[in-house]
Length: 212
Ligand code: FES
Image 1: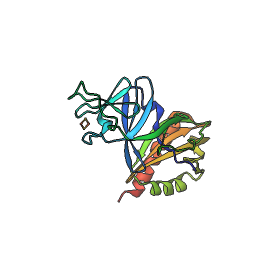
Image 2 (image 1 turned 90 degrees about the vertical axis):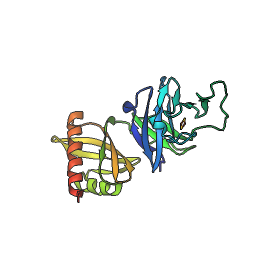
Image 3 (image 1 turned 120 degrees about the vertical axis):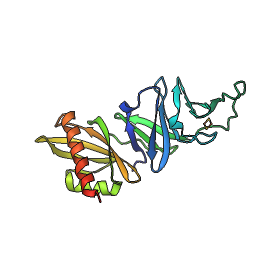
Image 4 (image 1 turned 135 degrees about the horizontal axis):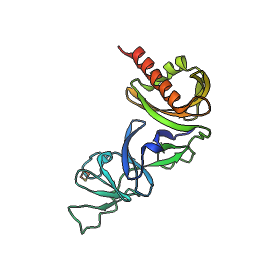
């Protein structure tokens, strides 16, 4: 049983960018330095709590948008603009989570997780899509609409008929309150455009059925 959760697709976080991710109800800032190094921190600046995901990446650092406190990839504060000659105390540090990439997916786990992220060899990352239903409702809907998908490490996998072709699909679920993001990966079968249209159609069906 893995504790790693799919939290985005690698291709959606290019170098020198930061994004927000929800990890088991914890808000995280996930960012990639200019050289490509990935970090995941609690989305709260140690200074006055501004979201770090609103900040900006400069080289190998992430700067908070509020007062410009700047943090290196270790999470330690390296620069306080209001006190440019001061070396920030070592106690000022962002709270880090484990983050890695495998199979084109960004995986996040609580710190010091000894397990490895799921192996998704044979699948190519396609896109992420947010469905406006909670995780349990989405799983129930998928069981009805895509019965060929069964639970596998980190998500659902199996065969779905798309454009008349048996198509290998892998779905990683990232829940957040009353919505769930699906990270979609595809294997042999229909092409990416057909799989993408299938996923959008599925989203419409599920949202329509769950509308009050
Ligand atoms: S809240 Fe981040 S620098 Fe002040």
